[in-house]
Image 1 (cartoon, helix red, strand yellow):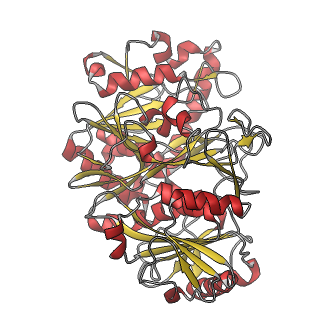
Image 2 (cartoon, one colour):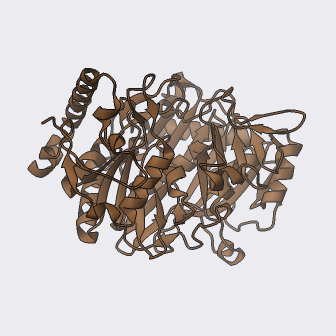
Image 3 (cartoon, helix red, strand yellow):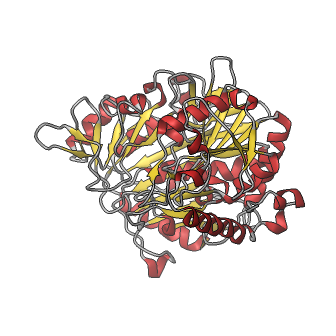
Length: 535
């Protein structure tokens, strides 16, 4: 086995049973990974310098192919069910053995990184990948150690990515040839049969979501930014709600765009980069993110590119709606170098309401915040997961990240409630979805309106505005906001058919109630009373 790279770790690959590798490339920098990716035919360079890669049939996550090894150390702590599905530890071992055998005679790329910007809580991870561009993805998304830190870097968790490996459903107890298997006892993740790089990122997030609550840290699927006065804001929201776009505000400093922890010390980013949706990205509306699609070092997934001119077409969804850009946080001009900040002043819960009935912004009490955090209502946008159709689908994803929450949702919700109460943070529900009608009839909320509402919420302007009680959901809605037409603040007023609005709003209230029955035994009377209700 040959070892090449600027730093070859003394903690080798033999502990995993990875043997007879042709060459192990250790901690290659970005230019070297470009060269290897292009030389191996894995990716191409687009105009402006980004590296473009295709992921085949897997253009999003494969949630039905994710399993947790059932073993004694975590048996009682994992929330087993449709999201956290078990696999026998013996079957995990079988997949591990065959995956290591699959890598024999091949080249592998190793990146030693950190997850967690706060040194008190960071996790030393190792990503071993079959593809060079996956190694660049890991280098972009996680925190790159300094050379001195590499010398002491002993991985606490290892992720192995082998797209060329195929699982055997009959033998392995999985659903397809694709597998994402997590074993906390072995501190190992196995990813096989998919080239979608996001599986690596989300696996690390899942790991932290399990480990950090035991340390008193709330892990969150959210973005965070800070204002010039040092005030910080949390943005919860699933893919397609505008979380990445809205947090990349040129007037505020970006801490991170997707995954954070909230400790007794404040907020900290889990990552060193961003993984942004770029379909129909606008240079006018989203200039900071758009600029990254023209930069050397960015990895683009499934973006349409002219084979001759290498010109990108971000508006073309030929391959998927879930086109992505993975880039270092430093590519955003106003990004934080530390990845840390204090306790939040505002907590924003973003939802893309496909029914077009929720108000564009509403002030939430702590009890309402806990209710909506547990509910996690939004619309999954086409392409973010394998198998979704072209139209958004209304969904409830508890904690705005159910697929990545190994513990029971009540653990995270109770931690959030306590931290909101201790910090005194203001809470808001923001609808970035539809107005004037449901999807197919109405139109998507203008981003300029959403930005104006958020600006007024974050700078305290909405604290001075009278609130009215929304008759459809029992939410407190500002009566006015600079830059936003008054009728936009009253969803019913934007519908031509008022009766259709009433019927749709009532239907959504019922959906909230039906979904929340699973949590009623885990919350108090105040949270139950915070449920949406018609007047």
